[in-house]
Length: 299
Image (cartoon, rainbow, N blue to C red; front, side, top):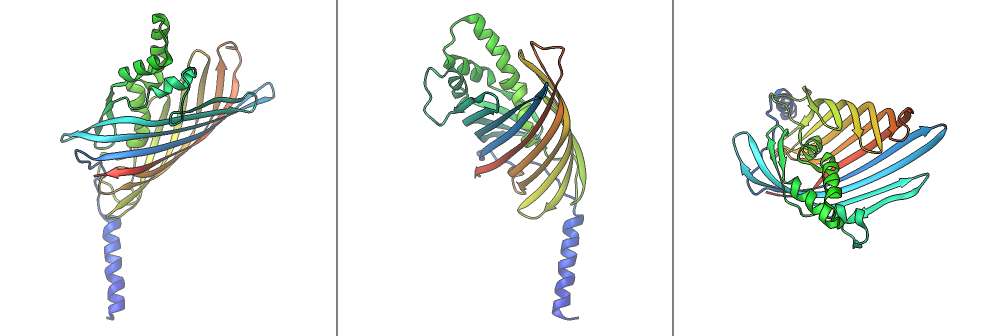
C-alpha cells in the first residue's frame, strides 16, 4: 500500500474517532480568569394600530467583565460589572426617543442617562454551574440604589416606586435570567458531534432550546440551537405577549468553555395592550439580532 493511501486511511480513522468520541461539554475556568464581553442587540418593533404603523428600532450595546474569584467541585463564583452601556431608540412617528451612551460626557440634568450611569462599575456576583446554568446573582440592590442616587431623587415614596420598577429589569433574578441566555449552553450528558440536547430559559423570555454540537476540535467547538420562544412583558404603560422562533450559533473555547462569539436571531409575533386602551389588541412583531463577542480573555 502506498504512503499516500496509508495517509488517507490514517486521516479517515482519526476523523472517525473525532466524530464518534463522547465529549463532556462544560466550563473549565480557573481562579483569576478574566473575560470581557461586548454585546450588541438590534431590535425592530412594528405595531399596527388602525392602519397606522409605529416602527421602533432599539440599539443596545454593553461591555461587561467577568473575573473568576472562587471554584468548587460544581460551581464557579464570578465577580462581574458593567463597563459601558449604550441605548438608542428611534421611532418613525416620534423621532429620537432615547440616546444614552455612558462612555460620553453626561449632563447632570439628563436624569435618564444618569440612571444608567449608575450601573457602571457596580460590583455584582454570580454563581455559575459548570453547564452554564446561573444558580444566583447578588449585588443588584446596591447597583439599583446607586442608579437612583444618580437620578437625584430625594422623595422616599418615589424612590421606593422606582426601586420596585427597576428590580423587574435589573434585580438579582432578572439579571440571572438575562445572562443565562449567553452562558447556559451545555448539556448534562456526554455528547458526540451531531448529538442534540434540550434546555429551557425562563423569564420575560421563555425559550425551549434544542442544541446541537456541530463541530469540535482541540481548540474550539461550535454549537447551534433552534428555539420556540414566548415573550411576556408588562409595565405601567404596556403589556406584550408574543410567540416565535429563535436561532443561535456560537463558537466557544474548548479549553475554557467560554464563548468566543455568539449570534442570536429572533422573530416573534403577538399583541400589545396599552394601559389607556385595555380593550384594544395591537398587532405587534419583533425581530432582533443579538451578538456577543469576547474581546479580552486573560487566563
